[in-house]
Image (cartoon, rainbow, N blue to C red; front, side):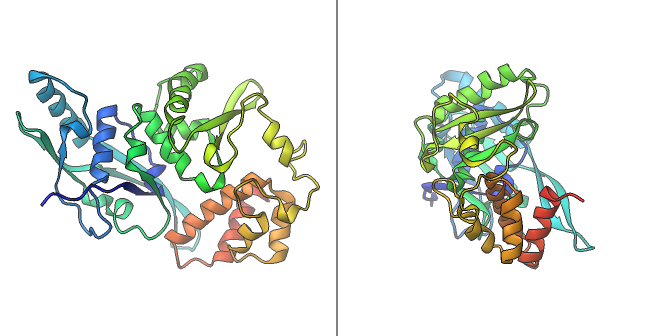
Amino acid sequence: MEKKIAKKATQHNHLVNAKFDMSTYEMRLFIAMMSRLNKSDSEFSECQIHLSDFMDKATGGKTYQMIKDACVSMSKKVIQIESLVEGSNGNMRKQFVVLPLMAMAAYQEGEATITAQFNNKLKPYLLNLAGNFTQAEIKQLFRLKSFYSYRLYWLLKQYQTFGQRYIEIEELRQILNLKDKYDRFQDFKIKVLNVAKKELKESDMAFTFDLEKKGRRVVGIRFYFATSGLLKQETDSNSRQQQLFGEEGDITNQSTAQVTIPGKLSLHTVLAELKLSNLQINRIIQRVPADDIYKTAYDIGNTLRDNQNLNPAAFSFSEFQRRFFPK
C-alpha cells in the first residue's frame, strides 16, 4: 500500500545546516522523498515517487535520459554535517561526518514513477526527531524553483521564532557548497540572494536583508522575516541595530534585562531558561548585544538537546565566555 503523503517535512537542524548541493530536479525529488516519511517510521523503506512530483513535462526518450541522469547523480550525493559533541575530556569538540544521501534510486523506461530509498545512516537526521529540528510545509517548498531558494528557506525557517538570522558570507557559501562559484559578491547577490528573495516573497518566509561590511568588503548578511513583524524596507542598513544598540554595539540604556526584539521573549527569560544565575545573566546582558544573545542561546539549546548529559548552566555560561569574554 502506498504511503500517505505528509503535509510537512521535518529535518534535524544539523541537516538544515549541512553542506551539499543539488539541481532543481534533485531538490524536488529530495522533498518528495521526505514527504513520504511518517512519524512512526523507524527505518527507511523504498518509496514510489511519481514523475510529476518533481519534474516538468518532457517527451519521448528525453524523459528517460533525464531521470536516468538524476538517479545516477543522486546516488553520488553526500551530506557533510558538522556539529558539537562532548569529547573524552568533557570539553566540546567539533565533529565532521560525511554521509551518502541515497541507498538506491531506480527507474524503468515507460513507467511514471521512480523508486528511491534514503541511506539508513541518515536516520538520526530524518526519523524519530524529538528535538532540535525544523519543520516546513511541503506546499511551501514545492513553490520554489531554485535550489538556493530551497536551502535559504530552511536556513531562515530554523530561526523563524527569533525574527532574524545573521550568517557570515563564508559560512553561507560553504553550506551552499558554492566552492569557486559566484566569487564576486555582486554575482552572489544576483544569482542567490535576489533569486531567493523573489521566490520566497510569496511563501511564509518572505524576507529582507542587510549587508554587514568591514570596510568595503561584505562579511555577513542579516535576514529579517515577515512572520516576526521584522520585515522592513532596505533603505537604512543600520536602522534596526541603531534602535537596539549604541555606537559600539552595546545595548542602549533601556531596561536592559527586558530588552527584546518584536516577537521574542525578553533576554532575561531566554537566559533564565538555560539555568543561568541572575549574576551570570546580568553580566551577559551588559556585555553581549541582544541579537547575539538570542542566537547563542538558540545554538546552546540545540547542543543541550543533543547532549543531555551536559550541565545546562555550566555549559551555557562557558559557551558565552568562549564567544564573548576571551581571556
